[in-house]
Image (cartoon, rainbow, N blue to C red; front, side, top):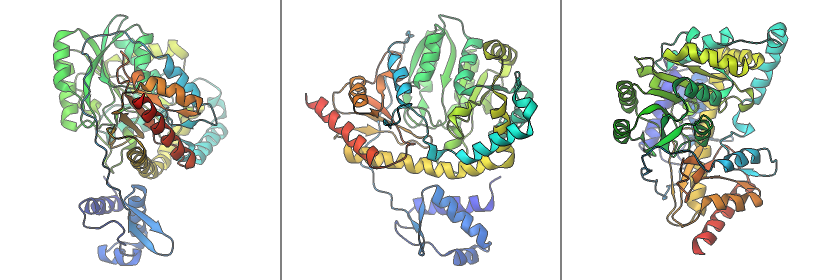
Length: 473
């Protein structure tokens, strides 16, 4: 149940979006507002802080709170994708490794890899939790936390999943080394080499790499940047091909950022269950939506135990902790064994640290701030693309996460563009690495979770300049 200040903040946010409060208008002072609503001054401050974190208002020193100005974005959104719906082997993923290595270069402007900058992560809270784990659990942290993982962490994860509508006991959750390992374990449990896996198009290149490494074939399904994977196209594909699994990111997908509506999630789960196809649900971005309400998950509609739910804290707490988990339904026993024979166990200290961050409420407190930070970062990036990029460009409008997908009107190969930009110490993610068959050559993905400064602004201007050069050659 939402707290009073959250309900009031949501109400005022809705009024701002409806135009009842205009951009630049001063909101009532804390004392006046608390009197109007018959609430304490502390609650009034909490309401305004939540609105500020969510990007609706801004505090001005010695003046009060004002409605933020939101520039009108002229740039249109991309249309639904149109991939070739037939099973294909994966190709052209070499650049993805190069992109990952570029994130280690300290002087490169990082707009490529979907790794949040330090300013978006609770560094001090993580540091304190790790120190506490090492101090209070000395003997445990030097030993293995064999699968299924640290019990206190699994208990906290079960509670979080219950809030998403999943009644998953702690004993049915297995801790993994990040979400990527969870996905690989899920694929190994439900497929064999040569099998066909249905995916979104475009999709996260890490999923393509996992499919490739396991000798599987990818079946790209048309995907809309607002509603997600086309259920109609998926049904036709299931009738034509023998699909063994489907992987998708229904909440703020990477790279499109879409949020699949609840009704479509329910239909998706039912459709796959009828065809006896396992659904591997990647929910790594689910906690960082821009609205107050945490979206539902496909797992909540799973009655057959065929949804393998995967997630991690890499985008919210720290990618370096490598703490993820999987709720594998009917595949629990097989996943637990595969986890053990793959790497014995996930590191113990990070598991205990994350459990404490969840138990203490520090994680939720961080999320309240982070959601607004990510929303502002995405809005700022879209505004910059609108400002710098040439006519004919399209860009997505994510409702969560921190990446945007840019479709260029210019006839330019972003694969080659990315190489030219790396020479200038600028990293982007070119469109072809998000497709099994190297489609989307006129597209690119930008990560918005960077520390914004003049270097970023100049980097975007450089990208736009090279696009114009390529388009006119």
